[in-house]
Length: 228
Length: 103
Image (cartoon, rainbow over all chains, first blue to last red; front, side, top):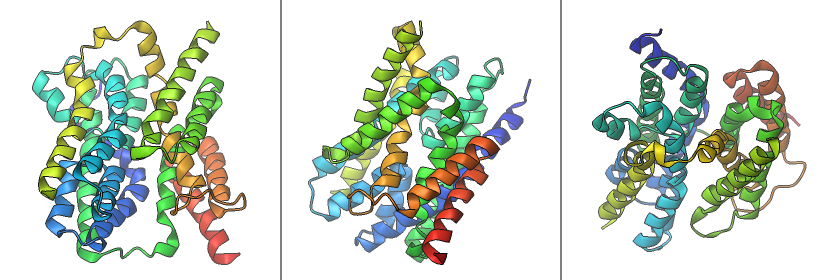
């Protein structure tokens, strides 16, 4: 049985490699806000209030492009709706927590933290204080997100654009799913999602980010039925 | 005004994170739904991966000889065999750099 501290550090270590994508992305996110002419305090406040990289950038771009508040809010909601799926998966492991703890821990659920902690949860279902792993991964991502967006705001985009560090984002998620390439059912679901995302890329409000997972999950349900 | 917009966007985002964890009773989800949920990572992350590789900053499809495709293939091979996240990301990035800077 692992202690709370051990679980927390495992969570930290699990997401640490993802800083290769989180930090450059945070810097870009902060720098874009300033380049678009927003108040630095406002740009930084988004990292605390919204705390969701892609949605923060889209939000600022829409507002600076003259889109209405309603459109900007809708886009953020649509882009971040994928967290509903993460929550549904994590709820199995967070069931026993008090309501207040559930409210608090929800704030730090983000892509890479969900992905790494969920992997750990699946392998260690019997551990007692499992949620400390999620706290470790989530708090780590939160801190580095705050620091890197702040760096982007203060220093501007000091990472040379020629390096193409945005490419680290798809790579980080490749690292997350690549072990499931062994399983044909998962590969089918991944390809469905990926192709759908290209097909629906121009759908309004960046909705490809939730349309393609829904299509892929339907295919997953179908695959499950065929397997039986 | 912009502040109010951010706060509303933040509250909505928080609800996307919190609803299924704190408000929805897990027993409401049927067994079939729970089984399907095991596919969530495979069903969500390619929607970040594919556009990140195949669509450029201007929203257009890249050419088939784009260095990002090569970088992604290297990352997949290295990731699959090494099972190491850092190796996956760095091999992808460095093979991409080799092509754009050296070739």
